[in-house]
Length: 212
Image 1 (cartoon, helix red, strand yellow):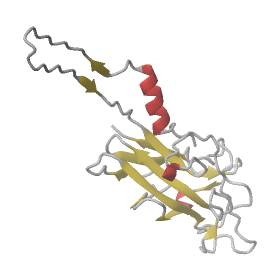
Image 2 (cartoon, helix red, strand yellow):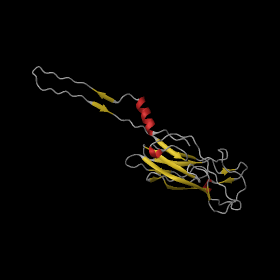
Image 3 (tube, helix red, strand yellow):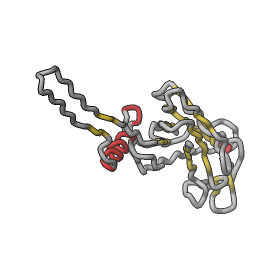
Image 4 (cartoon, one colour):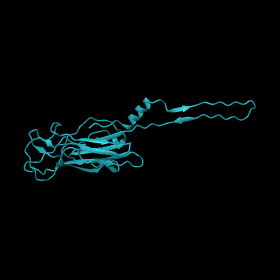
């Protein structure tokens, strides 16, 4: 999933694109009587911080150390129930994820107020032959990441998920992350086949973070 560029990169670009926001003056005082003199000059300063929003789910930049950069890698997580165990309601761990074992790094960093997070799918996972597995069969469990604020995952659905809202603290800066563990609930007996995997078979989830 693509993520916004780093805040510090944006700051640099903003600074280069703006005129120098500092002004100065000169002043001269004279006296014909050798009296004491005083001259003043003033400088005005302005700091412009660009508004930014960073979202990471899976492979991405080292956000915790301040590297908020785009990364086009899209991870794939695969679930493979054992023969004879299909539909026995024993959850199946995934293979893949940037942390392996079906676990993904998830993070949001923003400086523009409250942030909303949703997940969207094109419908249930399908095998291209008319058979489906609902996205409600894929669960997401969050455990602590680097930041004190835990990033709660949206609940996957056949379409739009619930909305997760992160309320900005007094500082106005949202910093939340987590390790998201995905599992396949394995509650239904379904025909053999590969469900999802491609966009055409609804195998991709799109996470979207937004702020005012």
